[in-house]
Length: 313
Image 1 (cartoon, rainbow, N blue to C red):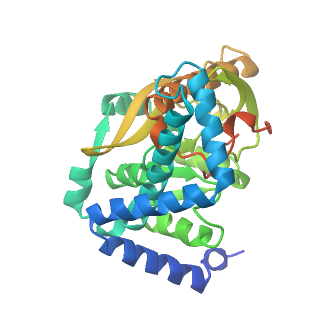
Image 2: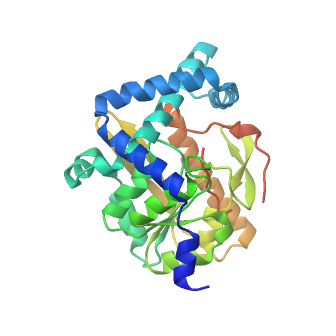
């Protein structure tokens, strides 16, 4: 297949493109303070009308509270936090659609990066870096902010917001300088990004992956994607732990530390070691910002599959 025909096959259909264009235009016209009210209203409607998503969030919070995390001891406390999770998700959606109103100055003022020394040290070997992150804060804008800083960013995604808009949202990301893959694309494009010194971002709490390891997470055995560890091992690249959160000052992207694969260890032992490190970092970050953890499935009851690992909430 020629490059031109391949590009044409990936061009989103007209109707989804028009819907996305309308959503981008509409969201960009909503003043930031009004957007908070809109997000809260939409979140309240979904909280009331989506019993399965509501029950999943409450069940996840009960497990996290049962592991000893404070502030989730009672049903009333868990319900308050669950409502905050829904508000965080709808803020995420509106912020994502409003991205085109952000000027260079707005990106500079709206984003703060913490631990950039960690990132630059990890990249010092010239092998790129695999970034493992959870669905916290506005993870999508975090990737865009990294791309705007000049980093080569490659993300692995599952469904993008909505099945109808999936292809259009993917095209939007690619037009912003972010390479996009799905788990079905395999490791080859990711290894190419790493060879060029780029960043491969994997959302490790998603439900789209092909190989998992059972790891204790908030006190429960949970299938965790082994893809970040396996990719780091194959590429000889560092595995970074990162997260994005929303605060009163704006958005913050934090790089929390990194680990290197150890080829002296048997493959299974090294994958288990690295995946346990990923799970520990994500447990800490999610526990500290649980009201922004946008996962709407019963995370602690998900059966394992055997990852590249990334998925939509």
